[in-house]
Length: 400
Image (tube, rainbow, N blue to C red; front, side):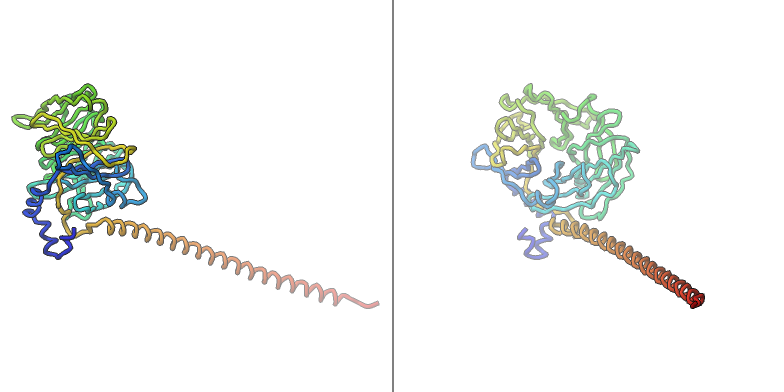
C-alpha cells in the first residue's frame, strides 16, 4: 500500500500482469483465512519447522459495518474474497486480505428475494465477475445477474431464468466456470460460464437427500464434491467431475486420521495440492491432505478465542490482484458514501415532515382567523340587534 502511494507510475505498475506474476511466485508461505462467529482471522504457517500456525485477528474487514455483524458467506478466487449475507439487503463485498482493500458492490434492487453471490474468474479475458443469483418464490424461478469488476457500474441481467432454488452455500470457480448447488426436481449443480454467461445444469452421480453434508471444491482445476457423511467412520468421499473422454463422476475414498475423526470438519479448500480442513476436536487445528502423495499433515492453530466457533477455512497466497477501474477502492469512502446517502434521506424526510407540519400550522391559523372573523361578525350582529331592541324599548317608553 505504501508503494502505491509513491507515484502514479508505481501505482500503475502494481496492475501489470507481469509484476503480479512475479509477486505471486515470491509471495511466500501459505496463508489461511478463518471465518469465526461474527469475526475473521488470518493465519500464516510458520517456516521454523514447527507444525503450528500463528493467528492474527483482522480488524479492517470486520468493522466496516459497525451496526451489522460480519458477513456469514464467503467464497475465494485467486486470493480475492467475495463476502455476502443471504438474509439481508446489504451489498456484497469484494476484499483482498493482502492489500486490505475492500470494494462494496452495488446494492441489490430486486426487492425482497433470496440472494446468493459468487466470484468468478475468466483467464482468457483476465476478468473477474460476480454472479448474483436471485430466487423469486412467487414465480418459482431463479434469475442471474452479473457485475464485472473494473467495467460495470451496475448489475447486468444475463437473461438467464432457471426453474430451481439456489442453496446459500459457498460456490466454487474453476477453469472459468462457477458451480452452485441448486434444487429443481432433484439436487444438482448449476454451472455458469463466466465468459459466455450461459447456464448449464449438471446431474450428480446419484440422488442425494441433504445437500448440507456435501461441499463443492476445486481440485487441480477440476470440480470436486466432498461427502462428509462417513467422516466419523474414518473416511470421506471425494467425487471429481472428469470431462474426458466423457463427462462422469470419479469417486475417491480418503481415510481420515483416527484422532481427528470425532468431529466433522468445517469448510475445506484446495490450495497448492492440498485439501485443507479445520477441525475442532478439543483443540483447533488444520488438517491438510496432499492429494498427490495421499498423505496427511496437521497444523495447530493458536490465537483465536477459545469460545469462538470457527465456521470455515480458506487457504491462499498473498496477492496484489487489483479490483480494476478507477472506482472507489477503499472501504472508508464506500461506507462514507452509504451513510451520507442515508443521512441525506433522513434529512429529506425530516424536511418533508417539517414542511407538512408547517402547512398544517398555516391551515390551522387560517381556520382560526376565519373563526375570529365569524365571531367578530356575529358579535357585530348581536350588538346591532341589541341596539335595535334598546331603541324600540326607548321609543315605546311613555312616562305616566
